[in-house]
Image (cartoon, rainbow, N blue to C red; front, side, top):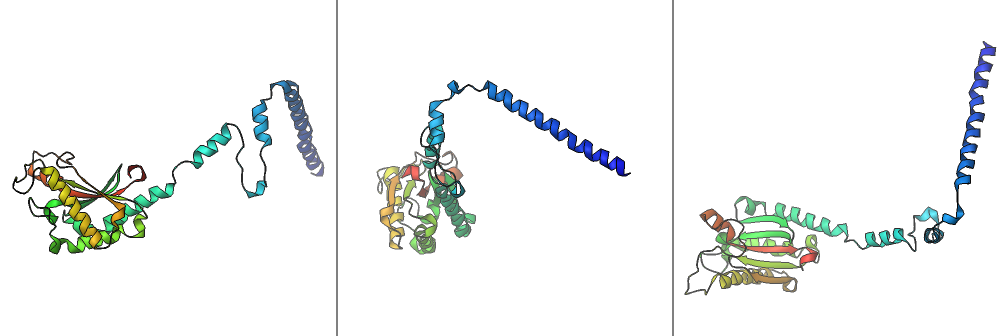
Length: 237
């Protein structure tokens, strides 16, 4: 039994010698293939420019495509901005859940940013630009506080007025342009009355040029009569 163990041990160690010889021969083969005249000087200089304590993290190359790639990545917009918009959207949906369920408001997002839409029928009398402040005071106050909170950071806002395609009463308004603009301005005034910073706002009236639904139905026209408060994405300031 002892002899069998000795033979097994000797066979186990013997293959290591053969393996090391093979590795040495492969190394010699690649050394023979190496041609120092084919070294890329630019890459060699880039590698030579690496400096610093390797235990403290990597450093970018001073020249070459790797360095350009690092500069490109560093110039990309911060992902924190996208997180801020996502947080603002979730907070708005949570904050205005009762109004959303009663169809007084909708909260969505698009390429412009977070869009909080006020139903014109819930906030204004037909054909009027005066807010029904007694019925909507709490909502406008809550909206002003939300737009002043840290949740939205230092972002800008735009108040947009929209109408349906029905003609306006000529005694009060020349066209839907005036009505949509007046409603947007009055919403802005109420928001600033409740503490929102007017320097962060812009106002626009679009009449019936940007409908959300078809104006061929009463339901579609009701959705199109709205005032949008938009928490603007950086690209739409």
